[in-house]
Image (cartoon, rainbow, N blue to C red; front, side, top):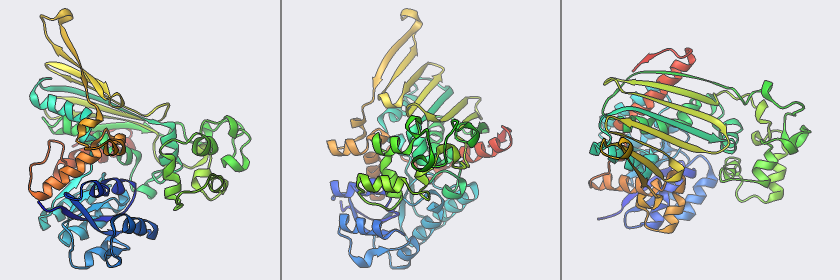
Length: 435
């Protein structure tokens, strides 16, 4: 079959990962156009995919205004722009692979759903963790009836102090004004989608939530802390959140986001130090004096129509990033940590020793369908799911069967509504909100 012809709108980090599947599988996907407000990103896409100048645009509206020249669009714009950039694409005749969260509020979600239905277009949401073998195997066990009917799902996400500082305290997700939502939606829409997807036996009935900004505030700053790490802080050398220690001396993978978001490509170490010494650089600020406008920890409790329950807790500033899950069913349990790529299956077997039969289920990322070591490496962040997600989108557009992991707008709206209601509940002091 002919490859799916696509354009990229918002050539950020996530969209780049998805679009690069065209370089590995030109028989399945071709990138022929780009739209981005940043001319550096446009130029990068132009060079990467040999896009002619007449198919390079500064916005989704500009792209949608010319006659349609592709089958689909990969939309990797920032969260608040998802709806306003997707609607003109749908009206122009494009099907869309849309980054999550697909909308930052219930009215926005309703508007996008109505447009997709009206235009008869297909939208797949990038809930890439569904494709990670860890969660896919859990879903398959549930569908097979191995655990019986699900009674309870308990999930936690620990966000490392490094990731917290880069993205949520000093970074572009630090306030609703910047990213369009609170932390629960911007960071944990993955998790609430997974919870709703795994508990698909029933719709939610009610949601309640509590949370607060506990750590990253001025009254919790260490004694003597300044306002900027490299300008006026006498305790910088001993602080765990020193910008110099985290982003220069001991960088982790999220450090690259700093320079990307500042519009600097491949800076030298001297240039990085200069940037972190500027008072107007958000990444130079003391984490305790950033005026953070979102919570750094939150818990959500959900009751389902069939009587099942679930809870999810997010903690920012943890020692190590981690996602844990424990599913309890009428016939057994499954529990594990996503990063370990395995979980323990415990089945009720009265004749077995101790009345239970336990099995370790291995779920290496290579199972996600990546064809090469490069693909497995590039998708490691999401358990190898990036490749499988894009291939599912290609299959959908080709009229081929899609996997159990695929998330249409209709599929995705349950997890999104959980996030919206949880924020409403938290703002009302934990009030129970009807679904």
